[in-house]
Image (cartoon, rainbow, N blue to C red; front, top):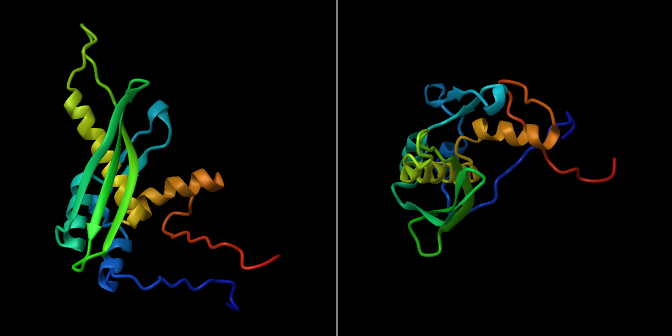
Length: 171
């Protein structure tokens, strides 16, 4: 475009435009929380798994499911490979996203035994579900910040959505 901006359009899919609008909307502030980064870094924003589940229910009418495909323990953490499947109303209308999640293993101080392995596994599963849902666009304004910084080594400007497009030709 003449002013240097790029107009983006989404390809036609079975996902309805109102569903896309709901998926890509700004996350309501009342559902956004902050917690400190490990090692004393800058606090980061997150949403709860309950918010993601409610959003998926609202957007896809409970026509979704999540399963843990694999799990394991490594380096003091439990990890899971999770798979989110959302469906439309007709056969073949399916979107599947897979992603890893993790949680620190908590141990008893006196014996070193796991405090509650099931709870740690649940935490890793919740992390994987949130990451899968973010691949659809849910809470992308929250989780996209980390990816933007990781890819550019710059902090995103607060209040702006950053959309990058590939160059269309030589500069």
